[in-house]
Image 1 (spheres, rainbow, N blue to C red):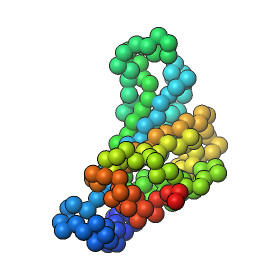
Image 2: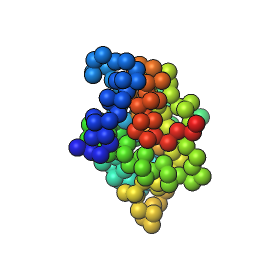
Image 3: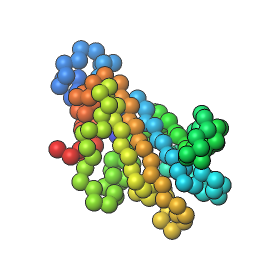
Image 4: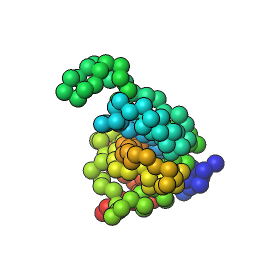
Length: 179
């Protein structure tokens, strides 16, 4: 069991149950899944970049990404239907907790000029969205072997139906919010 998952089970869940007055332990909010998304942008036609991107993204997430394809052609963006425009990974269970622990303790503090993440990333349904400009903040990525730098979007989906319990959950997990 991961360190963060163990902390959730022993400390965070009972504290949230008491704080919000939940009578059932299954009503306590928890992290359901984490979605990681990247777009290929201007490197759409560069096959070498796509392979490098896939390799780095696999190292980062711990599992192979799924390619996202364009649903329709858009001439202004030079995109054709069924062309690969990004990659996505959905993490659940053990890998989800490992990634979240890595993001909180290593990734975010390594971001240049980091002062905390904004509370405005919540969507009104208890999910949190966060964008990272560089994937180099994670320890699996070798600084010397990087050909291209890409950003990624992280979506943390929780079982909380509202932002307040989701904020309390992430705050209890030591998520570095600006206050």
